[in-house]
Length: 585
Image (cartoon, rainbow, N blue to C red; front, side, top):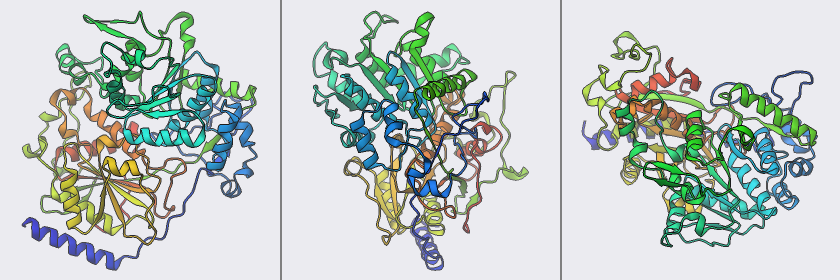
């Protein structure tokens, strides 16, 4: 079938679908008021922070209806709760005026703010997606400025940097400056923020001067989404040859060069010189901060050396289900410290988005991803060596055409997404987001989707800089378009559906990257993308039409194989469960 005929066929299906199906009801916006008072269990050694482990997302019991509709019904004195966490009163006044539903810090925010208030400690902060980690960094920065400190914030995207700058200005009177991509900034600002590349451009404006020389008097550096900024790291099972070919050995991440320049750490003839490291307190935050990343941070000297009395200088806060017994014990210790100070926290309630997977045949036929793996599917179970390590996926007996990434983005994936979007549209007043694989053309995808009758807005820098306003309830459904690289830190309060084209996008990886656990790393990317949904104060829709993540891949392709195993037995630790599509396909 020609491209024109196929587009016409899909367009007619979309028209018929829109005529047959009623428009979804307007969303019910539920804000930060979904909090409940911290429940304690006297005499029990169980963590008083109330986490119930259930994979990348956490479920909490629903608060009482009265507490959800009236923050004061929680019985928490919000001014007292925030000020005892170390937030200045002026900031709390503005916080409660702007976000009255945020009655108290979350357990992770409280532990982090108390650690900042104590001083003299470097901090790792890990909590689930959308649980207010970046918000806690903002409050901590304003608290530090109140104490005559100076903060540098390194963020993964310019979009997030602008959002954080706006939040800092809204909540406090600190002098804030965002470093431009050209390295322009107010060097007298109390809070200086931007991407690592922007900070490198700033330091490069003066010959033979480091970033630490250019920006003097820095007391704290905050790095958000540190693992996504560093990129994939080598692991202990790699051979010497694999280590030499690893991407981290060929291209130093910008965040590494920026931190070295800020701290005064020098690389000399194959070894690292820490002798001139500046006494700057560091904070590293991420929802996917793992032990491999922590070890890398230790080894680079971005936190002060661990050992002896210096071990107390590192506060490792992990509020995820992956926390070790030591990290759980630390959470309980921080809860006891908070209780002694009379500080309280409130536990947010987050809904899990629904997960869906589809494959598209070359003829454009959509099929739901079936984890049963029928015998005639052509798929085989994972191949492992004698040590239990997965064998390179290039050796699996899949179709040759599916083993290599195809140029461009197959139009069948876009058509399949358009049809799914039309059969089960998001609620009125909300957006959908299409996430393209690496290397795909945003302009080309926009043209294809526009030809299929979709109202598409690419999230180019100009759009993000101006902000994405909520769509009017009566407006046609709008689909936003972006690339995977722009997703970390993306905050869209009215986002309902995410369409992930080409699944995990594993086929882009080199053979050595696949052997180095690249597919598991792509599962982390899936977690980051999913984290754009279910964020505090941004849940949209209703229980009958929950937020969703839809993965679409080519049938019998490398991507379908990888997606099956992330949702199936191989990656059960991610706890992603496929749901049945609520409409016809």
